[in-house]
Amino acid sequence: MRFLILLLPFFLFAKEVCLDFSEIDTDDPYVKQAIIRKVEEYVLEAGFKVKCTENTLRIKVRANYREVPSTISARQRVSSYTLYLSVSLGEESFSASVPYSLPSGSLAELPRRKALEEAFSRIKLHIIKYFSREYLREK
Figure 1 (cartoon, rainbow, N blue to C red):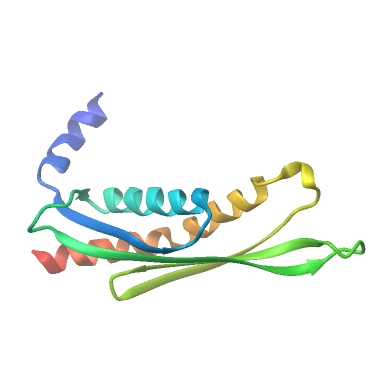
Figure 2 (figure 1 turned 90 degrees about the vertical axis):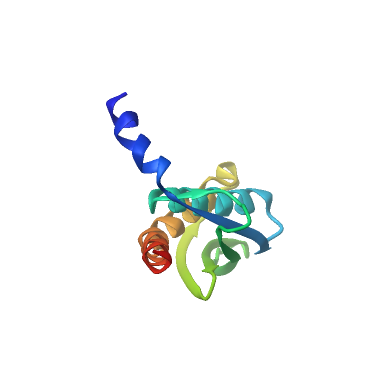
């Protein structure tokens, strides 16, 4: 409870930012939702409030996600992939690549989702720094 009380003034005086997610280049609904969720989370961590009004700072978010097969098993099936994630905020772009493998079909989406989380963890600090610079630029 004390933690929330300490954060209350922080959120009352936080600057607002409006994020435009109209240019996310993926057909996978899970990936699209993960991109939106993570970018909004990083905006909050940088000290902004996500709110779209007339005089808020607007940032266009573009994202590109692709998986490239990297290893073919003895049975001629793809068993390893490299996940490429690129997130552009305004004029700056942040990207990461993460290899992952599918040892069997029983794991389904779990290795891919874990690789996506790893890619976001690799670009997290860069995105937070970007928003911190935007905050200082607007003052």
